[in-house]
Image (cartoon, rainbow, N blue to C red; front, side, top):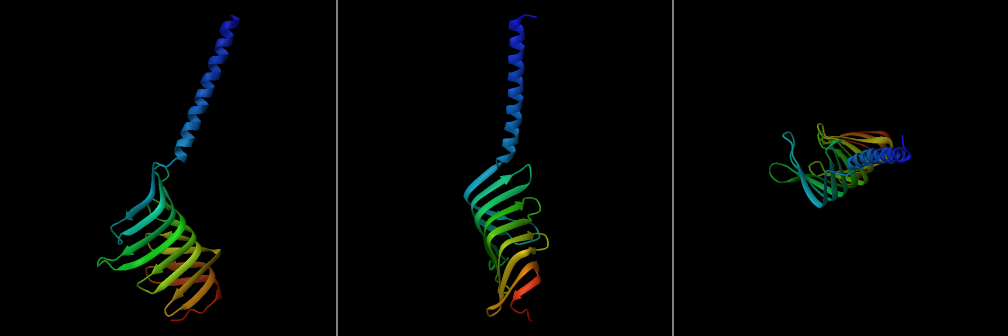
Length: 178
């Protein structure tokens, strides 16, 4: 085998190796990029079981491969069939499953239940869409203000937004009464 042929084979194998490496890297980076990115967007979530939820966000990034959506600086509102606002809220960030509509809200989370005169504030809340459940881990402080300014603060929360039933792992201040 001639020296030229040997050098040519080495260069070809390096090029093929670099080409495969670059292609694998490109595929990995492609999965990191959203399939759809919206800026200063308005989006309406609607399913057959609940009233639509209108969302306004600084950014919404949708990832089809993982069925996730990332939102930043967003607000949301829900209206009943008569057009009355029933639920509003906001957060700095959210990661949501685009199939189940479950979400993790984080950073200055606020939810207002207008029907039951209820205000919930936390740094992070998990939301399960199907049964309107919210949850905060046991190390997360959550504040609930209800009625005529009654206030309860505590760590860890399990809540049912549909029935306005809430329980804390540990109450720091306030009293829950009926």
